[in-house]
Length: 326
Image (cartoon, rainbow, N blue to C red; front, side, top):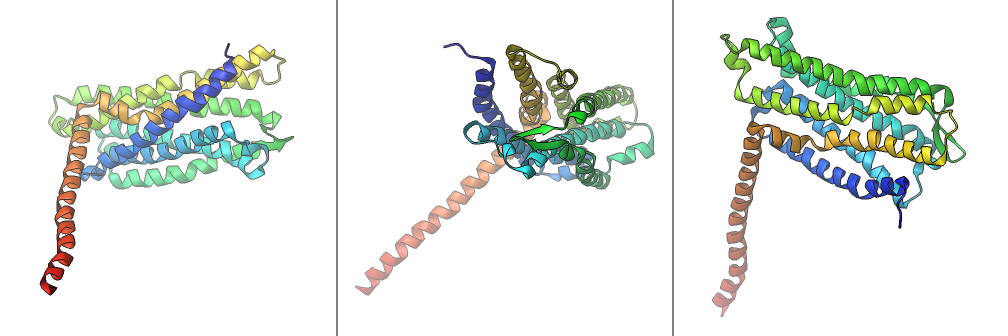
């Protein structure tokens, strides 16, 4: 039996994306657990990474679970006006919040090794919390136009024709070009400044173990983000520009598969792979990871030791009473 690209796409959604969701959901939960153990809250970069992990869980769940649901059920966008309006709007908003948090984390790493004391003030945890909250409230306002562009027409949730090209350019630039460019610029600037400051008196503070660990973790995630979004701008623009072209069935199948692969598959690899990228790239994070779960296992063992004697005593007391009564 020969498989079409549509069959391959549906197979990937059912099995591979479900795998991505499961490991991504678990991985981001573990990141949250590891980074909330010690006094990491005093580090502004950690706050951005923690917030990004929470957003990653939401974006993975909203983006992937609905695709899995649609495999065996009627797509709600074909009959629900509200869901048609909200699906892409929420999905895009969550992804942009997560991307912006990583950009802020890159700026934070650059600021901490900047020679300007005023610029270094950006690394304050209090300011990081304010930036996270502002980011969460601002992006839903910026992206609200997506909800108005979607309409339910003849049991299909489609984008209004005049907005297709506009959204294509917007999505390619705002989601596909600007974030990786900013991440790359501030990452390269950080690397250059850290090298320059290694011989200065304050290099010990800048190159502290935790700061180095978080910087390596962040830059590794930036590298994965750039790889997984490299196809996104070109594919998005191509689909928008050629939307009115007459295409063959084979061309439509190829286009649908490539669009799915670049926008619905690769895009979710970045938020899903965060934990595994951190473990692979950062020795410091591996130590914190091992310490966190060693401590957790010890707590579980101690709890069991306390519980078992209590059960024994509870079981023996009635028997003792009966023996006394006799």
